[in-house]
Length: 356
Image (spheres, helix red, strand yellow):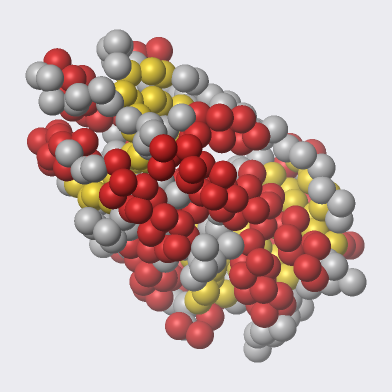
C-alpha cells in the first residue's frame, strides 16, 4: 500500500474530497498534518476511511521529522514554503529519492518581493522539492522562475468536489428554468482582498437609482470586515455557512459573483460553475482563465473599479432569464473536465517519478 503525507496549512472540504477520492480509487494510506482551523473559515472535518489527520501543534521539529521518517511515505506534498519544519521533512525525504511536491496557488506578478524570492530559492529549493503542483498558468510561470523545469510542473492542484456540486446543476435546472432567481450570490471571506466594500456599494447605488429591478445580493462568509458590512434592504449578509448547507442558498440564487482585488485562484468559482451558475468575476480572479468566457457564461469586470462592476451588473440584469439559464449550463460544461478523480490520478503519476 502506497503512503502519502500531506504537510498542510489550512484544509478545506474540496481538498479533503480529493484526498478521499485518492484513497478510494488507488487504495493509498493518507496522512495529513495541518495547522489549526482558520476562524474565518471554520469548516467541519468529516472522518474518511484511510485518511488520518494530525494537528501540527502536536509536533516540534524533531518529532515531526521522526514521524515522517518512521512513516516512510512514497510522496510528500507541502503547502508552499511557509513552515520551516515542513521544509526540513521534505529535505530529509528528498535525499532518499522520495518525490517532494511544493503545492502553490501563488501567481507570478513580477514584483520586487517575488524577484527576491526567486533569487533566494536558487540556494535551497532544489534540495527541498522535486516537483511543483500549481493551480494555473500564472502559477506555473512562477514555478519556472523559481527553478522548476517544465517537466516537473503540474497544473490543476485545486479541484472542486464535483460529486457535491455537479449534481446541483441538474437539480436546480427545472426550478430555475421556470423562475430564474434574481439574486447575485457572493461567497467569500470578509477580508479586504475580497472586495466586498465596492461590490455592495455598487449594487446599493444601482438599487437606489432604480436600475436593479427586482434583483438582490446575498453574501455568505465571515471575517474581520463582517461587522462593518454595508447595510441595505436588498443586500443580505448571511454569515458563515458549512459546506453541507450551502446548496440551500445556491438553489435560491441565480448568478455567482466574486469581486476580489486579489485572488490567486478561487475554488469557489469552480464549485459554482459546476453547479450551473453564470459567473461575474473580477479580472483579479485566477480561476476566470479556466472557467469564464466573457459573454458566453458570464461577465468579467475590472477589480476595484465600481463603474466597471456596475456595467457588468447592468449587463446581467438586462439579460433574459432563459439566456441566464443557458449561460449557467455553459458554466457546468466548462467545469466538469477536471475534478478529484483527475487530481488523484496526477498524484499517483507523481509517485512514479523518482528524481535523480
